[in-house]
Every structure is written in C-alpha cells, then in structure tokens.
Length: 166
Ligand SMILES: [Fe+2]
Image (cartoon, rainbow, N blue to C red; front, side, top):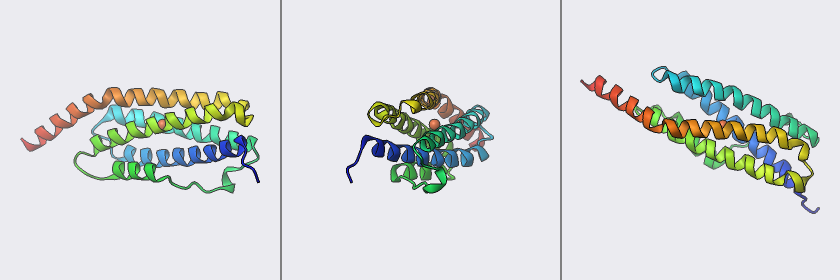
C-alpha cells in the first residue's frame, strides 16, 4: 500500500500526542517540587493546563481522520525520554536541569508543530491548521519565557545555595 501525505501526517499527530503526554507527565512531577521557585511553579502550572488543551486539540485532529486516542498507545520517543529523565532527577541543582530540559522540550515541540503545519496542505488537513497554530503559539511563548528565565533562575539558585551553606 502506498504511503500518502495523510498517512505521514497522522503518524506525526500521534507522535505529537506522545510528546505532549510526556510533557504533561514531566511538568506534573516538576510542579510538585517547585516550592522554592514560585514564579517557575506558576508558569509550569499554567503551561500544564495549556498542554492538556494541546492534547485535546491533537485528539480533535486525530478524530477528524477517524483515529481515536484510545486506538493507539503513546510510545515515548527516546529523545524526549532522556530529557524527561534529566528533569526528573532529584539533585540539588534540579531547578537548573529542569530549566534546561524545559527549554529543549519547548523547542522540540515548536519544531514538531511547524512540521505538522507544513503537512496540512499536502495531507488535506487544512481543518487542523487553526488548532495546530494555537498550540504552536503557546509553545513559542513558553520557550521565550523559559529562555528569558535561565539567568534569573540561576541567580536565585546560587543565592539560595550560598545562604544554605553559610
Ligand atoms: Fe510545551
């Protein structure tokens, strides 16, 4: 059977669904342990809700192609698995590792949505475009925030550790 653009697009939607499920799991674990960094905790909480909305949007696109989310199982992609593992480590500097992993995750997600959007026309999936664009914008905003917060979070971590050692 010949592979069509639609087939490739549907695989891309499933991969994005697995990616977002993993993002959700990672942020749920992070949110439990971010009490020392209330700004980050609040941002993760907001993006966690956005991520749930993104999963809904992917479900909606999948349903429009006759796929239900229960008909496939999210398989963790190894890159994402490694990043998530990094973010799950309970180390003193976990806030830094979380920040690096979140930055990588958001940029991975941005690329995935851009790729899906590039396939909309050839796959005859223009009805998915608005949904995917909404998710892409959210990922771009989160990536910007994470990137802009790297120095801030590093300085907070430094002063916290120095205070603790004093
Ligand atoms: Fe995201």
